[in-house]
Image 1 (cartoon, rainbow, N blue to C red):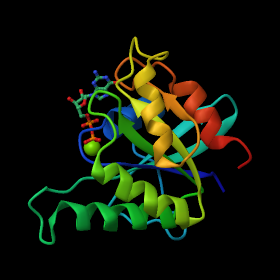
Image 2 (image 1 turned 180 degrees about the vertical axis):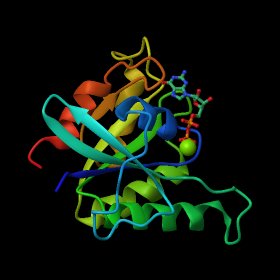
Image 3 (image 1 turned 120 degrees about the vertical axis):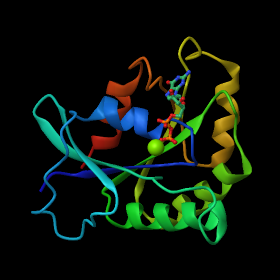
Image 4 (image 1 turned 45 degrees about the horizontal axis):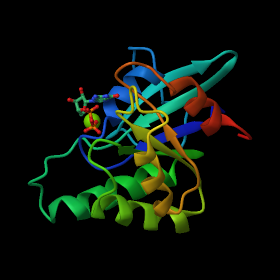
Length: 163
Ligand code: GDP
Ligand code: MG
């Protein structure tokens, strides 16, 4: 079985951009993977000889019933449940938000491997702004730029390590 990596995080941090970077454009064939649901977006990824599946989340409207926090929590729970590793995507340009803290709190107790990505960090890989992300309690923040492809390889390696 290929390992499954889920991308979670609040809207607009760059999950789908990262998904596109980590996958080929064709959709993953998930029929053989028991437990994967079809209401999320799956893609095939490869790093050297290591193949994996990436799950994008967040295809919902901010106005959906129950509000954005509830919907994010639901999407995050479902994606985390079926993943072997989780990449929690945050945004260095907007900093750490209350929603980030809520997701982090959930991830800390979820019992899955979590890698913290700080996106939109092009030209900012040494920025002191990264230090703020340690407060999420999920270890070392990995600066990446999904839009420019920077840091995505080492982020993927970190997510796959030990799987
Ligand atoms: P999602 O809602 O988390 O899936 O976020 P999207 O992938 O749709 O991206 C949200 C916005 O952030 C879009 O305007 C992207 O172009 C932008 N974005 C994504 N990645 C980067 C990045 O690495 N750097 C910058 N500057 N913008 C980015
Ligand atoms: Mg998206």
